[in-house]
Amino acid sequence: MSDAQRDQPTHHATRGRAASMRAMVNSTDGGPRSLELRDVPVPHRPPGHVLVEVRAAGVAFPDVLQSRSEYQHRIPTPFVLGSEFAGVVAEAGDDSGFAVGDRVFGVASHGAFAEYVVAPADRVLPLPDSIGFVDAAALPINLLSADFVLRDRGQVQAGESVLVQGAAGGLGLALIQQAKLIGATVIAVVSTEKKAALARSVGADHTVFAADFLSEVRQLTDHRGVDVVLDPVGGDRFTDSLRCLAKRGRLVVLGFTGGSIPTMKTNRLLLGNISVVGAAWEGLMPECLVSLPEQWQRLVPAVERGELHASISEVVPLEQAPEAVASLDERRARGKIVIDLSL
Figure 1: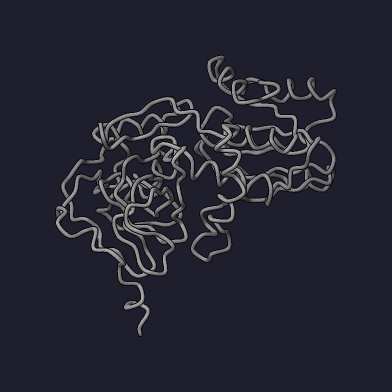
Figure 2: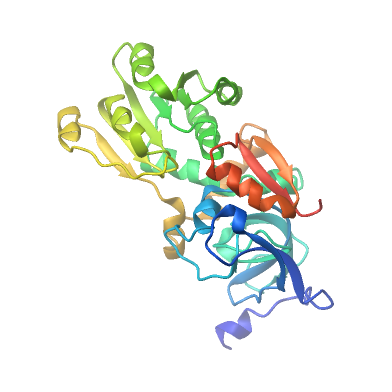
């Protein structure tokens, strides 16, 4: 029997449903506000994949980059935007571990801003009944990325001090929560008092403003510095982030939402015995070098207890996806924005 034959669906859930669906399409690489709501064909499910009827979709920073084809994995236009989803299995293979009707959430390379999405089976995760679709759609990228950043790349330990740049964004808030669960002291870098309040609400021990964060961190640490800096911003903050580190400190590069990719003088690494490492969780998925099911199994108890959660600032209908992505691009968003397909 061929692999394709083994992967035939156990139920024909797609029988009788429409051949087309509503979807938010990038056809011009013109950025968030150029996205168009269209009717497109329901995607075909290849072997090894699961077709999910989407109930909610999270808005994440990769969507901003994909709207301009600036993401590291370029997708030819036109394509449906969106990577985070939660919903119900519509079609699955016998060996996928899923059955029609299962509640799931997960990560797709694209296509989540639509009524149906296809994703590899190993990027689809079981969703307990205690977690709603909107809450689940806000979780996967930030929750699992933060776990990878803290445990794998940053190797944060109880009792260490951690500085989080971009702390009021979805990833920043996830980093704060998980660093606190590990037992670290967290200093959150923010740009406004409202963002500071949000960071404190999820557990940040201290908040400092981006305009003068270096001097504030030095005061808070009695000039010792912090053990770890987690930086999804980059840009002109990078050098001062290095200066924030204690001897043998680590800076983890998570991205460049500040808009520019920084450079550094490597003598800073030598003199401080410090390390700079990259953390690209999504970049390891194609080679199966990270296991989403293993991460979720470890984290789900804390999610169900409410210790880990997404701070959702807005829930919008699919029609408002362009503005939702634009608000992330323009750094106006606080917390997480979710698209609810039922609205």
